[in-house]
Image (tube, rainbow, N blue to C red; front, side):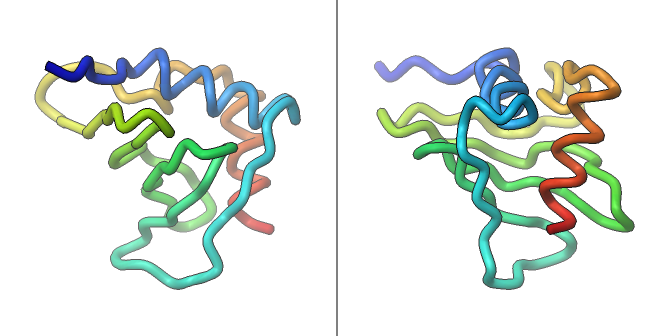
Length: 96
């Protein structure tokens, strides 16, 4: 049985990208309904980004195949765990 990623695992990658420790690459291909695909050194995230604001992380897959999926009813969204400064840094990276 494969262990799932936690919201904290995903948040840590976002934090490291915000700090510039890990490379953050936004996909150039347009996606559906404000969702943007990003790669943080092999971690593939699908982020809900509309109107210049990051709303939540839809899903994440790490290089070893473990996954995290957004569930609005249960659990915590990794974006909610970011500090105000970290969130602003990620939003700036998404605007580039």
